[in-house]
Image 1 (tube, rainbow, N blue to C red):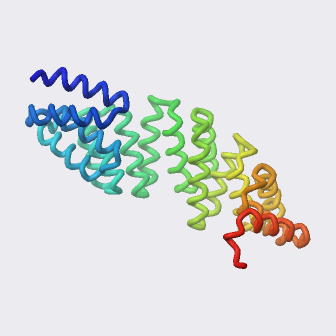
Image 2 (image 1 turned 180 degrees about the vertical axis):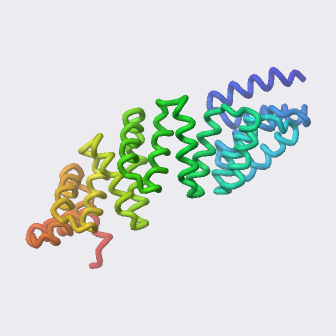
Image 3 (image 1 turned 90 degrees about the vertical axis):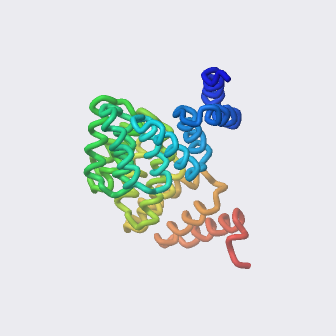
Length: 277
């Protein structure tokens, strides 16, 4: 059979997002050429995209057994290992990829991400800086570099990094808010505020950033600042029960009991199942 034609057809389906049809054709090629590299490697990519990580790891291993000199396969092995939270092994895969193609910026980014996941923030920062020398307008790299700076408690630099990231890629605001919420759950209030304040600097009407920064301000003892932020969120999202509840909490903390009771009544009406009868 003409496996090259089948492989091209599979690649076209893969690029078009038709993963099941691409997988079927790649399997045909792999069966016809069991010692070939391309079909095994592409099958591993599909399984990674489908979230079948252990199967993806097995398949990329099969691909590397056929061509250990493929930087792309080593890099993809690293991505799979990272997704499995096996960060040290991912670093080893990226190292092998970079020995083959030292200037591959995507691999340098992935390596930096693994270092950050391991808490090796200074090394991650240096890797992100290496990438930004040649790729200055990548919002994701600026974002992750700022994450490293937050962990290093270099908050002013982190805010500047987040600002640059949001300028280049505005939809990162959702990720930044989510990151702030994660810091808040860990009790890392300064780190959380760095994230929320930067979101608000680009979009003062962001509901989540106003609400969550208001909650943090209350924990920091800034009761009026807390009320201001939560009141803004409540005005923007009047039908969200938890925001109305925290609006009541902020008012109560300032001794404005009558107003607080009104907000509590609103919260109960919006989410009655959250309260005991």
